[in-house]
Image 1 (cartoon, one colour):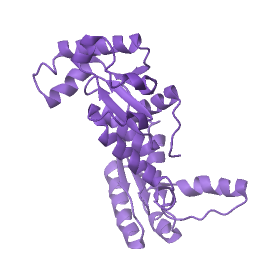
Image 2 (cartoon, rainbow, N blue to C red):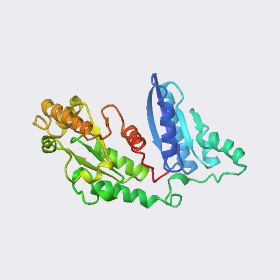
Image 3 (cartoon, rainbow, N blue to C red):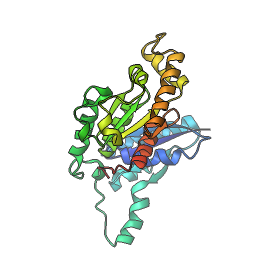
Image 4 (tube, rainbow, N blue to C red):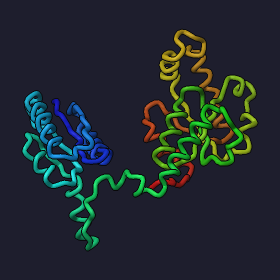
Length: 272
């Protein structure tokens, strides 16, 4: 079965998309075409959206699912004229909250993702800069300021995980790639020893690692299955020997990896 889903907002669309994606993920037997449409903040833009929704309905032979966080009632009334099934995220959750809190909500556009609303915005930027500056073992003299240091073989998912934790949670995460030379010494690199309590390991299936490395350096020793298998085996031995917690990143998204790391290490998120 094929259906189209629209995430429509008069702001960034992040809230509509995040919640909508989570709900649609529960319907694995349906193939969704997902379309995000932010800043639908005029009635004219809404009328253009109605045309898009109706075309999708005609092409699919079924009405599209619409997740919206439109605040303006006039704009919503225009969208309501479409051949779509609308789910108003704000009214669904705000009305019960208003009753429970005995207070009216502001119904303001873009509250959850604006700079003014978030006093910790600069912490997010600082954390991202920290992750970039301390990527791939380039610098180690700022590890005293790190909340976490991810270690593992090259291309095991350390960099995207660090950046995600920085952007989403404000976590200052560095990462250090363990090399063949490190494995031959059978011990942690000197730069990591003082910060062992901050270390968390990522490993990966050798087959997957071979595939990833071949995209970067095709037909190289670096990407060969034998080399990948050796590195993964040795780094896992090192993790066990040094009692460093680790997870296999092969079948997990960066969101899942990040959540597991923070729970395992007991690191508190700066951004909430």
